Length: 125
Image (cartoon, helix red, strand yellow):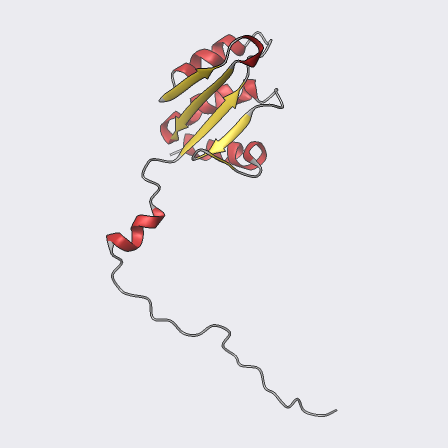
């Protein structure tokens, strides 16, 4: 068996010396400018526990109602300190397939399956 003509390098990435002091200018693009939030966007449900869920949603730091009748949509933003209230509302409104989960106002993959279960970590200090 012949020896290879090229020997691979043991180092894959060039060595970079990061700056020792990070400046505010370096961090500015990473800061979204507001605290982490999860927003639920949902329609009215014909369920006995929906009025209570809507009452809890109205207590969120930012709540908005748009449309009327069958086109009514509710939008409630919850912060980290509102994790218990968020989960209480979500446990009701998740029954509707039209319910949206937004992370920092962005639709994220697996909002229901991944992000909502992670909220429970905020309940335990």
